[in-house]
Amino acid sequence: FTHTNGSVTISISSLCNEHCTIDISDTGIGIPSTALGKLFSTEERYSTSGTKGEQGNGVGLLLTYEILARHRGSISIDSEIGKGTVVHLTLRHAFQNNAAILLVDDDPVVRLLHTNYLSRIFPSYKIVQAADGIEALKQAESVLPSLIVTDYSMPNMNGIQLIQELKKNPATSDIPIIAATGDSSNANHEALILSGARAVVLKPLVNSEFQTIAEKIFHEQQKEAVAVNDR
Image (cartoon, rainbow, N blue to C red; front, side):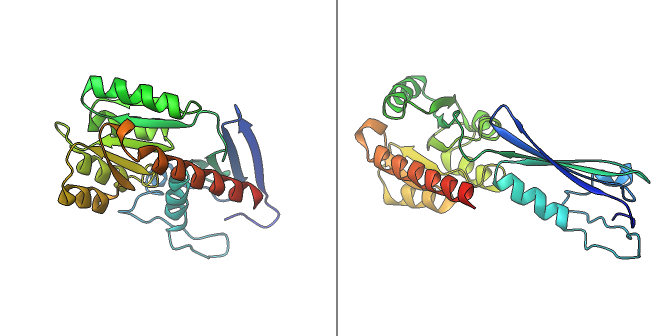
């Protein structure tokens, strides 16, 4: 909400050829500091009256947050009552040189075997390792890999539980996941697919159809990136 004769300014900059930042600032009424923590909450809605009594429904910023998270971006807000508000948006560029595959397996020998294999067939991708589900959740949100390859049978958090947690987080919910397992039973495979895995392959990866599936996923991602850049 900005007064008549006030201003709204949009500035765009690029950071290290990896991220784009968009700052939207106004000279409006501002937002109380006590309300800033509520703006992206699903539990509470915040809205205030504008310069002419108009009022929003309190969901716009929450929707913006969720959309940005799905595109691996972020949003933050600085505001001061009577002076205005600045909204900071950060987005990843469609093409990046730091594409990564997150490999999750509790067996260090298997991780080494699969890391060497992945590095050989996808040399342009960085291979990031995680030894369990807890570490994988942290790595997934930090690295935002192009693909996650996870074992099924792991202590503390198995593959199904890991996939379910990844799908709950807007920042990682769209990352494709391939589950790798030594169990050939259909029930096991169906459970992994129902949890959100894109595909299930038998271990070791070198003896499976893994490469064909992964190449298809990367091709789809490249087509989507081109479409975004052409808009």
